[in-house]
Length: 216
Image (tube, rainbow, N blue to C red):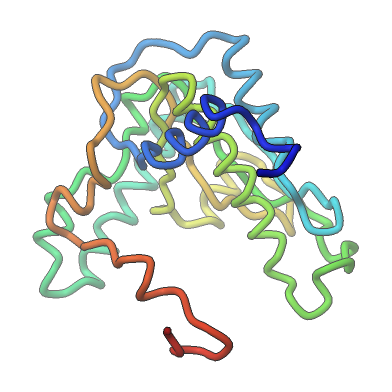
């Protein structure tokens, strides 16, 4: 065992948060205490980022009018997605895909403008700005679970229209609408599994040795 390892109880708590994190869609209103929200945002901000570029920007949506406008954008994209799914359209429309109007807090996470100046780690992989932002969202997600709060990542929206709505400058790009707040309960499994939309693949199908597709 490494001398830097946490205690057994601390390790169990970390792995529990990872295992019980869920992409939540059902919220019960309520509120997120200011000190808790600050802790969650700080956890997100402590995420790793390529070249320490910290590309994430968080917009807390406090206006009810803006919340309703975002909900409208999500619903429009939900219909377009259903059309693109063809024979699975009806199944998709039966899914609850967002909790924008019901959650206690609504956050939009966007990539900052001016990212082209960050070359370190991005010369051949410019999409590492997205990877860095995703790490921040995952930090927030795990911290929220530890605090007993649900969070859902909504990606059904037109980024250009959401940018215009929120005044995001040219070069910036919203990637996540995060619904955050109290929930009645956490799903025992991912919601899409419970709804029969998809099945998770086992880890051993996704781990290769030396070359793509090579397994033990």
